[in-house]
Length: 90
Image (cartoon, rainbow, N blue to C red):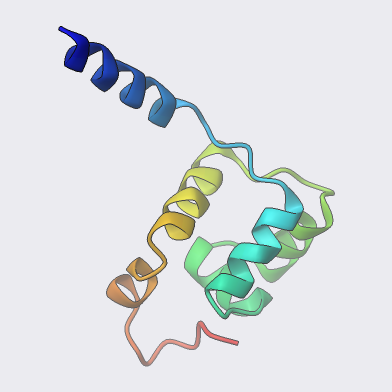
């Protein structure tokens, strides 16, 4: 029964939307070795949107924050999803 409680806690914490601050976005871009243009491509937003996120002027939507959470946990997914020919790295 205790194992079931742990599973429920894991699911509940994963279901919470992450709160990603501007500094964390900049760190993620650094971790992925990407400039604003490359990050905009993988997030499917404009470069201006990335600039607003990193400046703290606009908060990313929940879906964008979830994608950033996944990219932070598994940065190798970028290479799996995007072909080598796409210009996504700095």
